[in-house]
Image 1 (cartoon, rainbow over the protein chains, first blue to last red):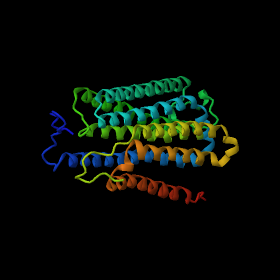
Image 2: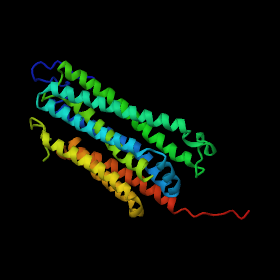
Image 3: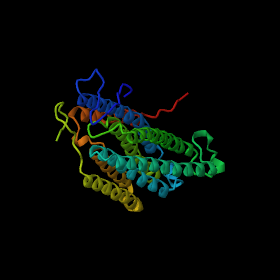
Image 4: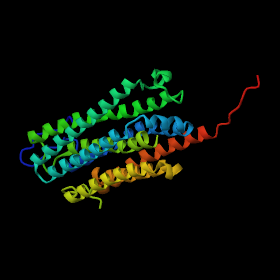
Length: 221
Length: 108
């Protein structure tokens, strides 16, 4: 991406010299993004596998943990993220249709949705901290009045999974801001929007992971 | 369906309505997840699989249409599929390890 020569006068994209064509550059970039997505699946996958194993060993303890979460918060956040995924996809759609103004609007709304998600996450975290619901050994079972002595394990999973996800949301917001900046600058056109496509795929995987996190953490428990 | 030939100019553009339909389906399925959750007692052991099934359908919608994998190359589909394959492998072997352990108490 750093080798982009973004002097896109007209609709001509000057691809880097080691590619045969602009299309070759686009396909190569996208394949790289998909390889990166595999590492994302495997990173979160490890946490999901750990979650399912310990959930099977201590089902009642996980149920107690899930009850202490407010499913309405998770529900609102799910809707916010799905909407942001839609606006992200529309951002690319408008670039493909050569409507950069609408694309910029879509990307701006996507960033706003990410911010709303993080604010709700912040409210949830501070509420948990206030109640003394910390991960692992930092959870004082007597003080919290937990039924299960190892409730800290549930919150270990909760903070690791939602925390790692939250970092992805923040990173995604930064990347979409970069795309928004470049869209306003006029870097993109129907023949060249590789960066937005790649960032879009990343943003959708963040949504994808939340789609599984919501029922697992907030509902089933 | 696959628009990834080197020479083919112009990428597949998913129509606007399709995006709206997919998003609508995702919103509906989210509501369905919550509705199913309210029947947890009746569902019993099925509660978790039902929630997981709905999440999987949502994930497939996101992957195929939002991430454009439906119109992507076979290579990219195989790459992404490989991620889930190895995840399944990790779950299978970890599960085998945990659930085949025999608890032994020391006689010492």
